[in-house]
Image: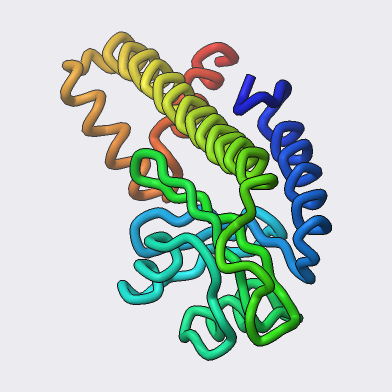
Length: 206
């Protein structure tokens, strides 16, 4: 359960966006965007877009303040051109956790947003939505890392089995078998795990 929302990360994001869309309508915003900033990069979660690199000044302006951004502010030009075309001024709601900052962005057609801060009556639901966005993003990241670790572990197991085959068939030491696998991997330009898998398959079907 993430920030009051249940389900898989994608489902959580969809429920989160429904809450934010309602808040956007209540505020009279023309544009809604959800950003996740980390280090010098910002990723647009909604609508989805590739990560953008930020200058230190823009990063501070985006993640370090909550409230209105009028059309003449440098951040407004950045947001309008990169994230939210159709808007001239913005209302930001950043929510920090660990090394990431989730920024809810409401864009307005006027030169100045109608609010100086996010109104109290929508702030609580926006905070829950920010928490859910971060949580879903974090779960997706952890799952991707887990898949990568599992793949690495499976690859190592294959390499160990292939080394054993080479040691048995050619009377090599463990180090010699490893060096041969590494050399063949470079020569054939294939990953050692794939080479090991092919060697194991060949050993099963002489």
